[in-house]
Amino acid sequence: MEALKSGVIAHEAQVYAYCLMPDHLHLLLATGSGNLVEIIGRWKKFTGHLLRKNGMQGPFWQRGFYDHGLRKDEEVIKIAEYMVMNPVRVGLVERWEDYPFSWHRWMEGRR
Image (cartoon, rainbow, N blue to C red; front, top):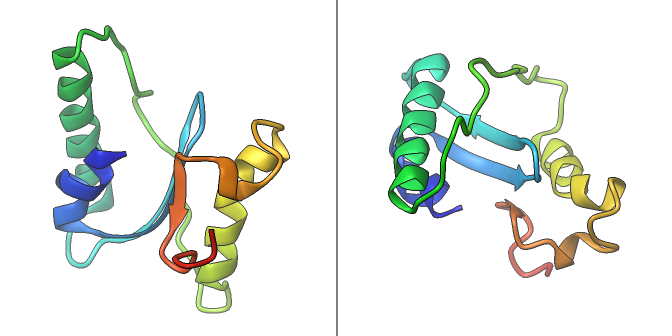
């Protein structure tokens, strides 16, 4: 989770929400002028290096990723709230507040 706050993504994009599940990661972010594919690629490389440094063995990430550009009529906050509810929907926790690996910027003070 720290790699989202201090790694490549933190420097090249604005993170609005994340949810790290046991087998995948959801990210809601905005990339200023950078290329999303390149930013995600560098972040995967950065986190893979950190994981190997800590004794883990990969592969850690699939080669590609799925992205979806939000349209003007989509509400960013609703998307972020949907993401943090993922652990509840799959039965990992009963309340989203109990899952330590998800966050969105509008939830501050709501835990």
